[in-house]
Every structure is written in structure tokens, then in C-alpha cells.
Image 1: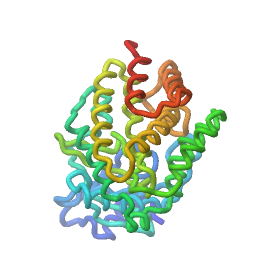
Image 2: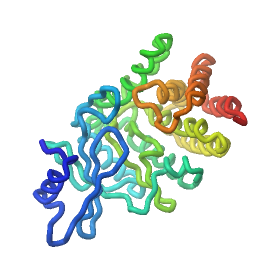
Image 3: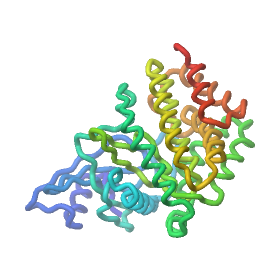
Length: 336
């Protein structure tokens, strides 16, 4: 199997597959960030594309193994998003199942990562609305669809990349959370409801003006939609802690997005979904400090302890609605 992390192998692969040719000219560069694969930005004539290969051992300090066949899941998830929200998801160009490589349309070079925008204090509420509306459309459009379940029914990759490193690893440090975590795992690993992205976060949403491009579908599975909501919302809570001066704007944005989402839920009881989402959110918040993949921008011990305190407050008080979560975070961070 080739390794596209080796420059010479990537170049030969691109030429042999006819993805680039010497007559039209080409170039490529490696993209930084991410832990689960090697990603290259390829300029091929007048076409720009991303070529990505899954890694068996993720780029983390802790041992973190996962089946590289998740790349097949990623390209399939990308294709579904491109069908339902084509204005917000790239086109899939090819998939090589022998080498776990897929190619897709690249977001414009001028785009920015939404995560970076938020961390720098750039809050565009129209971008936020597009991001949450796209998620809502996919959840509604894929709910209880047998063809989606057939393609994405295997949750092994989801377990390896989300349940194990985020929930199980964290519970290993806090055994008293075992029963709480088991109740969460029961619905996350139970019968599926819709297509779950599995990595829906500002890191995987590129912004160009007010257009968005949703990326990284390798954890896609037919599961419980609360995971996408909690994983996504968690990043906004983390940013409240990191940049306390923008706490109110961050929480207002989150409040608006969640309100839009729950107003459009058509596939299950919104109140039931909200309870599942909030219960998971408290656990994921803690996991971004004490799990296998801690948030890299939460560096101060005081902030880590603040997150731990907020997480346990939500867990111990049995919070079941997102308005209360927002109220707690707003009050506990206060004017710090």
C-alpha cells in the first residue's frame, strides 16, 4: 500500500492515476492539522482538489488505532451531504478502496476555518445559521431511510473514534460516571435514527464569504442525532472558556442555532432529543479536558478545572434542556 505522506509516492500516485499530468502542470502541498489522516491540496491544471488517506494509528500521544476503511465511509458520507445540501458540501471525485484514498473538490484557497474565525472573535450569525440549517436538513432528510442504514449501519468506526477516546477513556478517570456513561452509550450505540456526521464542528466547516463547505465525514454512521448536536455545541462552550470576553456573543450564537434546529426537528420528539443531547454534552465537555483528544487551545489549569466543574454541575444536577446549560455557563464564567 502506498503512503501519500511520502512526497515521491504521492506524486507517482497522482500521475499513475491520471489525476494530474505533466503537460497541464501540477503542484501539491500538505495540509496541517487533524489527527486521523494525511491530507494533500492538489493543483491540477484548472482544478483544485483534496486527496486524503486514512491512518491506522492516529497522530496522537496516546495509542489510538482505527480501521483505515473508514475512508470509504467518509466518501460515502460526503456524497450524501453533497446530494442534500450541495451548496454546503464538496463534490466527490474518486475513491481508491485498495489504498484508502479519496479525492474531493477543494474549498477555495481564500476560505478560512470557522474555528479560527471564532477563536479570533469573528462571529458571523449568517454563517452560523447556514451551518445549523445544513445539519438539520441532513438529519431530517436521512431519518429512518433503509438505504442510509444499509450504507452507514456499522458503528465500529464511531466507537473507535468517539465512544472509546471521548467517553470510555474519560470514565476510566472518573469511575463514578460509569452508570451515567452507560445510559448515554445505550442510545448512541443503539438502533439508529438518521445519518450522523460524527465530526460536525467549526474545525470542519470552511467559510468563504458567507458560504460554507462541510468536510471530514469519516465518522459518519446511522445513529442518534444527539451526537452531532452535542459534539458541535461543545466547541462553543469550550470557546466561552477560552475567550471569556466573547462569552455572551458565543452563547447567544449557540442559543440561536439550537433554537433553529429544534424548531425544525421532524423525525422524533424534540424534547426527547434535547434530553439526550444535553446529557451527552456534559460528558463531552469533560472529555475535551480529560479524554484522549483534549482541546489544544485549553491550556490553562484554571480553565481545565472550570470545565470540569461545569461538566459535573450539569451531570450532578441532571440538566435536561439547553437553555439551562447556557444559563449555567453564563453565570459560572461570569466576568472572569
